[in-house]
Amino acid sequence: MTTTLADDSITAPPSAAPAETSVPVELAAPADTPPPSAALEFAPPAQPPAIALAVAPPTQPPATKAGAVPAAAPAAAVASKRPRAPSRERTFGTKVAGQPAFVLHSYPYKETSLIIDLFTRDFGRVALIAKGAKRPHSQLRGVLQTFQPLSSSWVGKSELRTLTDAEWVGGMLPLEKTALLCGFYLNELLVKLLARDDAHPKLFDHYVATLNQLAHNEPATIVLRKFERALLKETGVSADLTRCTATRAPVRADVVYVVDPERGPRPERASDPWPRVAGKTLLDMEREDYQDAATQSQSKQLMRFLLAHHLGGAPLNTRQILIDLSQL
Image (cartoon, rainbow, N blue to C red):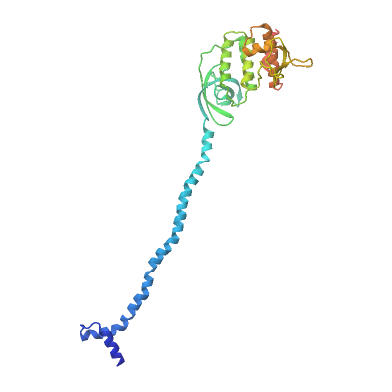
């Protein structure tokens, strides 16, 4: 009886249903009850998509980290570019073209090449390898001559670079006889007193002017004194000859002085081993006025003394040749 009441209570909701369908309903009822409860039980599992979405936020940190990486990537990229900037600076200027130059000195290198010392206007004294310059048909063979104005090109960033081209510019008379020996004297001074890769454009222009003066047979004693003085000034080892180092007073023409190689002129002393020069000579040298015979003689002795000091006692071969020739 209890069962019948339970069945009626279950079948009551479908009131319009025929009697034949009540049996399947009664049979399905036990199965129907679980499904709703099962559906209710499985609804939470339907939440896992939401849980999966909730899990997605943890995946956000990787996204955030991934986002941080791109942010850091430009910095890393910049950092990776920074080392390359100095390399560009190092390579800047390694290719030089059309540089005015003169050959100071050259000597053989291996069987067919030369190492040359060039005096250039914008790069100072540079050492170059002239590959194949000794070969009979080399274009450089007849070009790399001393006292000839050149347009030179080279490559390399080490101390010894490679000459790629040299063209004769022309426009200067050749040096002959005594003027030629004076030219070699100038070159020897430049090789021994100029540091490598130290530009001296004013001295370069003075060198060109001196070669022209020698080629036009101007007095060698005056031309050489002017160049020696300009060389010491440009290299920063020449003192002011118009002011006494002891008193800072102007040099007087009627006073006899000695010139300290490191400081400048001061009044002579009896114990001084250095050459004595009149104040007038010092003032004439500063003005480049060598017309007075006493100025020529005293300036010659003074410049010989100063150059010997700054050369550290190294002899000048061409000067000795000139001295020997003057004694013939």
